[in-house]
Length: 244
Image (tube, rainbow, N blue to C red; front, side):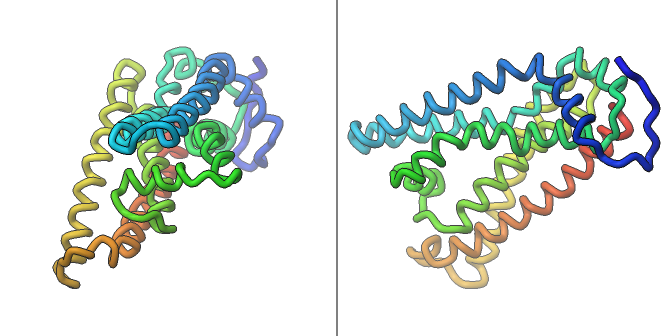
């Protein structure tokens, strides 16, 4: 392997980014294929449940399958806890930013896209069950703030996992990545309750409270997730640059 020295003034090179991607590809290829197959399989089961099963039976199945997809995305950063990657990636003749593009891009872009392809195709073809399933998860009618929040929530959970994995010695990386996702989810649940209670205290609670203020609540939560994503990405980039 070429171990040429790279100075801080070197420009980002797509050729070196491709080299870093090829380094990780041998032990991510099967996962990428598996994620794609699984996403289409789960989407097919969700469509079948929604279309052909009674609502009382379909609802728990849809919830279970949705949680499965969310978990796959949230824990995608665990792939970088592998010992081989942690030992050899320091030898890559690439800038920290180039490594960051590949590692963060895998977690925040590649995996979410693979898992979203079936739902996007279904939505483009005019099926409404995907939209209704998202609404089912949150218990309210679908709106833009719910969509944005759901996307940013999953992204922030995935980056929490990656941050913990990268910032931990390989012996505890897998464990800490899992704990980071659980901890972040619990923290976000507390934040959701606090925001809802705070707005209810100001506006007053009523039977139609969530219908009236869901956009405000989820807009605030989306903002919190967005700020956290920026912070987590900066932390991950620093660890990649200095630690691996």
